[in-house]
Amino acid sequence: MAQIIDGKAISAQIKDELKEKVANIKKDGITLCLAVIQVGNDPASSVYVGNKKKACEYIGIESLAYELEENTTQEELLDLIHELNKRQDVNGILVQLPLPKHIDEDMIIRAIDPSKDVDGFHPQSVGALCIGQKGFISCTPAGIIQLLKRSGIEIAGKECVIIGRSNIVGKPMALLLLRENGTVTVAHSKTENLKEVTKRADILVVAVGRPKMITREYVKEGAVVIDVGIHRNENNKLCGDVDYDDVAPICSAITPVPGGVGPMTIAMLMNNCVESAHLNS
Ligand code: GUN
Image 1 (cartoon, rainbow, N blue to C red):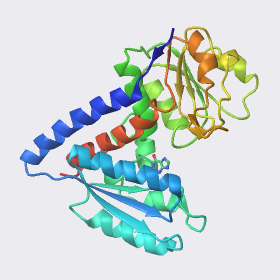
Image 2 (image 1 turned 90 degrees about the vertical axis):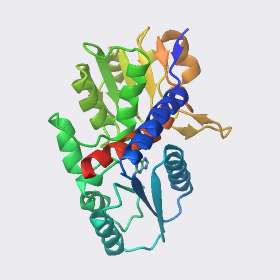
Image 3 (image 1 turned 120 degrees about the vertical axis):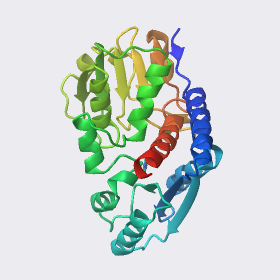
Image 4 (image 1 turned 135 degrees about the vertical axis):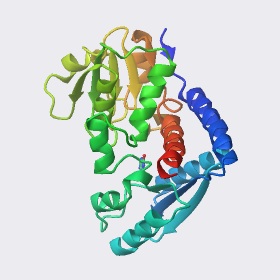
């Protein structure tokens, strides 16, 4: 039977480690503060933002919440970001995505000072990751690396296949697995013979955005399967991109949904906030 990779437990462990670090940083008179901006009131975004605030509280990081109206202009949002960039007491700035259609997301991301880019979405952060330099790393893929390492799963030399090529997950995931000396393939919606490609994987990271798409026909026996997806099924129950009940019996380790990758994203955001203290002090 597969090892169930417990993201809830691993993220709790990371948060406890960070809590201790923050307590020590505070002894040196350094305070930490994350500014979280939400534009509009998309219910899913409100849940994520609420969870980020709770995690800050737990760890001992101050948080500033900006809940802006749906009809906020791009200029108003840019003005706020410029103001937060300048503030010495703000270490991290996070703009919750997606933004309303009238706002250019790329322009907003580029406006955040890279030294406060705790989401790791700024082109400078992505470029630094690409060439192996220091910078913030996108939280979900960084969390997946922690899940693998803390579960004792070797990456070096392994065939790693990622399904999905988004800027937030697929692409940085590929760079991180490469940095860990994995042999990396990125598959996507135009990939031919997808099952043949995914069946090569020792480590399969699934970020396709389609509920339960990945059944055992896509998975090599004994593979490690990481499920980034989160959806509600027909019974309003959470499920991932992987058909867990079908795949779990044939793999060596698998992340559940919920309780796998999800909790790691926030833990790694908190990690980036703690790192930002070093960058900004
Ligand atoms: N929307 C969904 N995931 C994320 C995330 O990790 N960061 C931000 N800023 N917005 C998101």
